[in-house]
Length: 99
Image (spheres, rainbow, N blue to C red):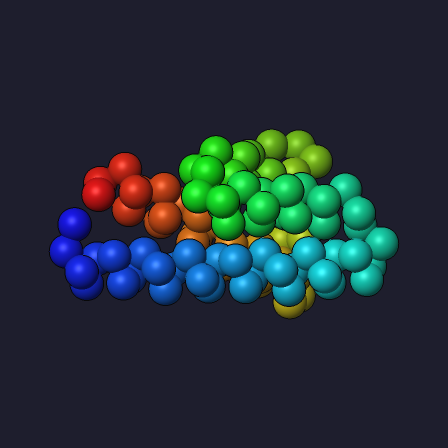
């Protein structure tokens, strides 16, 4: 893997972890501990280098009762942050599979 590619992956990873932290905190403020706990557990896995955390994170999106049903990407700050989180997780999985 080229150094530039590794740098891009590290930047995406840092952005994802920051977005997970801030979104988890906001969800806790709103009293949504279920989804806050989900994001926290994936944050821990991803920080440890476990790619299952990325896969599990993506499972929160789509289907009835999903996180993006409650917080649509076009509806408020949390929805926008979740859209970013999903995009970063999907891109990181693709990057890692192609590395």
